[in-house]
Image (tube, helix red, strand yellow):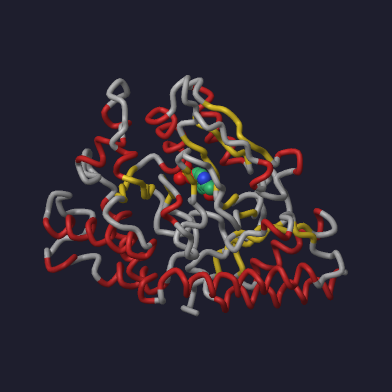
Length: 363
Ligand SMILES: *Cc1c(COP(=O)(O)O)cnc(C)c1O
């Protein structure tokens, strides 16, 4: 590992690939021979246009998507998508249907509720969000405008391991915390979005990958900037875009391609998460995972210790050896290790080793 750097297990903003950070650093003062940095050049400059278009192309290539899909770079985070999606696509007759699998899914539903165009199609709240609803637990109204799912539940540490069947209803997914982490049949989704700060780059840009024909459907009675059709028409340049963020997302996508794409990432992420889940499963109950086994996330590993005192001690001792950000979200308690694409296997090995030692010393 690089001197003076720690292993960062925070959920987002999160660890980024070291190669990407270094490359950005090396070309910061003089981007592409312009004599300016990427945050100084015009967003209409051909050098920036290339950054944006290359990023779009690489993301679509990684996802195996063709010309019927478009990539948009928007602002306002995933949270603005919670509001834009129902404002653009749902109506009182054709509501947006939501699967409630955790806090962010619930927040998305609440925005549709504000507009009175939301309905619930399934929930695992009764189970304290330990699993994502199964196909049997989801009832998709066939007149719904879309079915919205949160594919990886960052706070609870659960993830879909199947693609919900929706009939003719378009499938919309919040993939903020597992975007580009493994190959999925993305063609089954009509609309995917992800705040960049988990798995794709810095906070400040949200990546939307959606069918063009769907994006074109925006109504004209909502403000211009709220319409997907506006951003589609303007190639994400309707207003000044977050240039640096898009540039970093582009670099991350290029890095992913160099690593072997999503198949290679999936293999690495499965290996990393298994290291931690194995420690949990073999700890005789010292570590208790929050997620049910069939819904376990490859990205966020959540677990509790026997007492809150031990949990505090765990966080402190981990931090002392440069394992940072392992404290869980207050709504679940305990620990959460976020091990996104950019977390090297060495970091996870070090955490697994620390967990073993901590158990021996405190069980
Ligand atoms: C972090 C997160 C969000 C919120 O993202 P913002 O960019 O902060 O709005 C939404 N959904 C999921 C799944 C997340 O992990």
